[in-house]
Image (cartoon, rainbow, N blue to C red):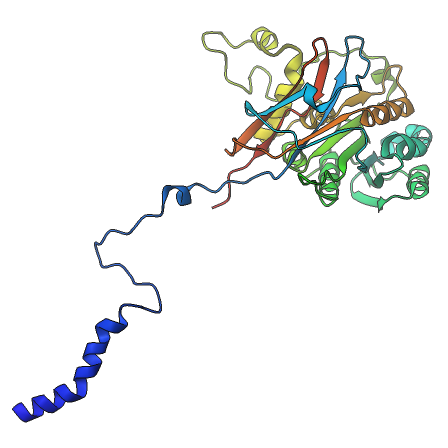
Length: 380
């Protein structure tokens, strides 16, 4: 038995000795023993990942007390904050950056009486809005959304497309068309801190009505903000009653009558009068923020005004003494006299709504810029 044990030791001894030596450099990870504590990653490695915005661009329109555009300011005259945190402006321009323009044209049969006037806007869209260094595309919409012309720098092709515009069915899928326009613009040259890229502009000429869209307005506006798309709109009025009517209720209604979409002020009963006093002329801004935060809820009134307010653009109605051509000309004049500020957000990475505030050093000036953007939590 002793001889057999000696032989067995001679055969297995070297391999037994090699086992602990080999364990010093395993080829794969070692599973922890049951009940053994697992070493935690350093605190900085546990930081929650959030969606980041690489660059935020905001168009800024500055006017004096008379309503005239102010075009003699410099970068040092501006201060911009993101959720209260001051940001460093990485790009500053006054009306010079090239424009990528998508024109959304209502082609519902209801605008037949307005077709001759719409046909005349082609040259204004190219010469006044798109400009010599820009590009444009045209989308028509009724019961369907149709890309009438893709992006081109050829002004003649855009003018020809608008001049030969035809109407179709009586439907009006405005929000679906807006979603298509924002998606098209999202693919244009992307801005970076070193290269500003194109200014992305969505110009809508339509009634402020949506019929049958699958897309919600809040969804469109959220994506437009993240894609740095500025929305301008020319409101089309198709009836004589609208031309003569006075505004009946300028307060946008986003909830059923008698209810309110925002919580009351502490200690103040929530009534229509208290809400009017609370927000005053800022109702459209409050509604724009509400729409972006509540993308699943419907907004039925003031859609074009809300879209423009949410993205830093403007809405121009045509039911008084302003023609469609005059409205387009005004938009073009503003775009090419507009400041463009860009910044890479720092110090404010949290998800949710980010409020942007732009201030100028000089007093007595009115500043219009996009109010903010919404960062959704990362999907798990």
